[in-house]
Length: 325
Ligand code: PEP
Ligand code: MG
Image (cartoon, rainbow, N blue to C red):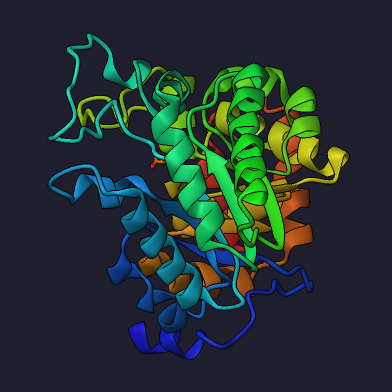
C-alpha cells in the first residue's frame, strides 16, 4: 500500500470525471516541511502557528516567528501556504502564559477572542507574517471567529500592520488574502455577510462538529457518539460550500474529516474541491479520489441529503457507493 501511495506522489489529484482537487497538507513545525515534497501536496492548507508557541519555553520573539514563517514559505516554494493566527487557549495551553480556570475551556477565552482582547500579541504575529512574505503571496486566516464583526476587527489589525510597514518602507507581500476558519456554528447563519468581507474560508470540522453536536472532541466517552458523516453535518458543510460558490470565494476544508477517505468522498460529492489533510492521509485520499466519479457521487448523495426522511444511515450509503465504484 505504502508503495502504491508513493507512486501517486507526482500524479495529479483529479477525479475520474476530470474534477481537479487541491490536496494540501496540515502542518505546524519545521519538521513538517519535508512532507510537502514527500507527499507531492498542492501546498499547506493549514499551518498551525500555535505549535511553535507550544513547544517553546517562553513566548517566541517576533524575530523567531518571522524566521519560521519565512522558512515555511521557502520550503513551499511556489505552493501556497495558509497561516492560521494563534489558536491557543481551550485545550492548547502555553505553560509560560498565565492561564485562567475556566469551567468550559473550549467555549472560553481562546484563539481570536484572546487575540482581539490582547491585540499586541496578534499584531506582532501578523507583522511577522507580513514581513516574512515580503515580495511573495501570503494567505492568513483567523481561528474561532464567531461573527462577522470579529472578522472585521481582526482584518483591520492586518490593514493597520500593512499601513505601518508601508510607511516604514518595508517590502510588502505581492498578494495578500485574508480568510477565516468556519468552525463556530453561528457563522453558518451569517455566511453571506462573511463572504462579502473575507477572501476565502476554511472549514474546521473538528471544532465545527464539536459545537454542532455539543460533544467535547477530547472526551472519548462522547467524542464518537455521533457520526460526522451524518445528515446535520453534511447539510451544514453543503451550506458553506454553496455560499462560497455563490460569492465566488474559495472554500477549503482542513478538519480531520477530509483525512478519512470516505469523508473525502462525501466532501467531493458536496462540492468541495480543496482539502487539507494530515500528512499520512495524502496517499489514501488521493488514491480514492482518483477512482471517484464526482458527478456520480453527487448524484448519489445530494438528492437523498435534501430529503433523508430522518434516516441516518449515510455512512452505509457512502460505503456501498464507494464499494460499487
Ligand atoms: C478544526 O477545528 O477542524 C481545525 C482544523 O483546527 P484545530 O484542529 O487546530 O482546532
Ligand atoms: Mg479548530
